[in-house]
Each structure stands twice: as structure tokens, then as C-alpha cells.
Image (cartoon, rainbow, N blue to C red; front, top):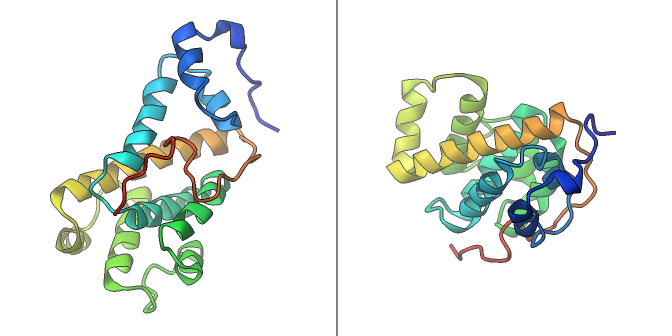
Length: 186
């Protein structure tokens, strides 16, 4: 059971209500609506992460699954398992991430570096120089910043879900909740 009740719909400003009316009903969106001043930009940032990144969708999903694992957020993991599959992340790779086996030899060098980088960012305030240099070999400067932004977003999202015990009621499959079906092709 969630730690906070749903917000009073009558206390939500009209512009926020209008913005949210285009989204499917979702317990997480309701929870985020307690902060009427930030819910719209928070959702817009999520949309940007599905529509405006240079980072490929598969890489984004590897990062999100890693963040979900290292923050202990089943809500995010449950939502993104099917999305990651649709983006080309196979079951073996998802199992490796959920087992925190970041050095697994079955991972490609790219996947191993990306997953290790994301895990380290969640665990520590600084990434060791050697790992950062490896990330620079596989990612553009823009992609490095995008990875960090995806990590930060899903860390925050995950903490709202875990700290407030947001219930998983709908798993959205391969269609992200917040994109309106506008994900770019990679």
C-alpha cells in the first residue's frame, strides 16, 4: 500500500490537469502529482529521454535496468523489462544485470562497459578514471551526458517508487508510458 494517498484532484491546477489528461492513468503519475510544480517538467524530461537522445534505445534500456537493479526498484524494472526486450536486450543480458554480474564474459565489451559505468555512477559519487576512459571509447561526449541524465532521472523516479511504496499496477510492455508513441528509430 502506498505511503501517500492520491492527491486531491481539485487541488491540481487546471494546466497540470490538462497536461496529465493525455496520459494513461498510472499510480506513479498520481504520486508525482503531489508536486504540482514539478510533475509536468518531470514527465517532459521522461519524454525527451525517449525521443531526443543520441543514445540508442537499447543502450538507454541497459542503463535503466542497471539503475533499477542498483536502486532496488522493482517498479522501474517491471516497466522496463518488456521495453528493453523490444529495444533488443535479450533475456541473458537482463539476467546478468539482475545478478549484478557486471564483468560477465557473455556481455559484449560495449554492454559490459556501459553497465559497469551505470552501476558505478549509482554506487559512488565518482567514476574511476579507468572506467571513465573506457566509457569515452564507446560513447560520444553527448552520449556520456545523456547516460548520466538517464541515470539521474531513473534514480529519482525509483526513489519516489521505493520510498513511497508505489504499487505496480500496469506493465506497459514495449510502449513507454510517457512517449505517446513518438520514439525515434535507431
